[in-house]
Amino acid sequence: MDNRSVKERQTEVDEYISQFKEGYFSPLAMLARMTEELGELAREINHTYGEKPKKSSEGEKKIEEELGDLFFVLICLANSLSIDLDEALDMVMKKFNTRDKDRWTKMDESRES
Image 1 (cartoon, rainbow, N blue to C red):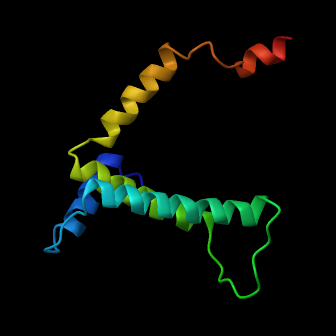
Image 2: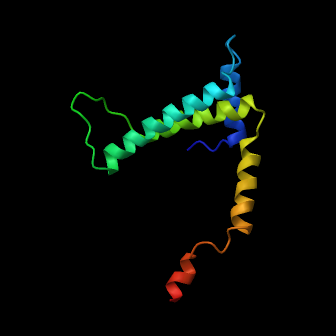
Image 3: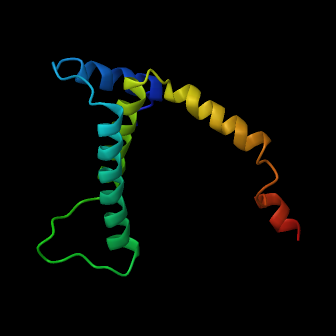
């Protein structure tokens, strides 16, 4: 199992992108690409868990691969905007653990009922 942090992954992606003259696409172009990748993920989830089976002519793709594609583009977008995704996630988790701490029924509370 690979235990690299998101920050380490951001560095890896930055080193990869930095070898090309074109560099990162514009944020708007990356958002369009992220939307495209999200659509591909949605399609795979629909084929796997939904009512729409794949056509026999469609190749085999996996949800894991589509999530990886989406994560790569997310990292590219964050890198291009100098956003540390570890810090961004820490901020979001702090929000969920404070503002939304009582929003959902906790597992131990549901067992007591």
